[in-house]
Image (cartoon, rainbow, N blue to C red; front, side, top):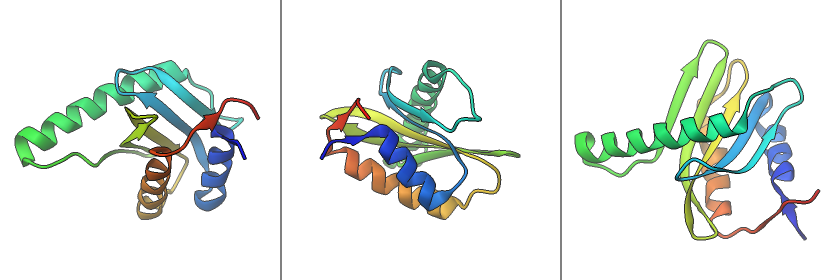
Length: 129
């Protein structure tokens, strides 16, 4: 069975509800896959560039200041969160990011995003529906 990124988005939304976007970006900031809910509009290339930059800064801070390995970054706003985790996709470093709507459960978001990141390390996604 071919799994699509759209299928992964729908599966995450069924568990977490109110997901605005799910995005997989190469470490150098290029969009690999991106899915949005119908009401949310943005340029996925901008999200990819931003998440790549923020993740690189987070990795440097973790390594240089805390002397530990980076796991995730969460940006909280008054209308939701952007959660970013590093993963591998087809052997290449990537960033998986999720944008949620109002009142997210951060523990659940983190749990399911890391679970999806682990899945992506061995997955091959289909671009077709």
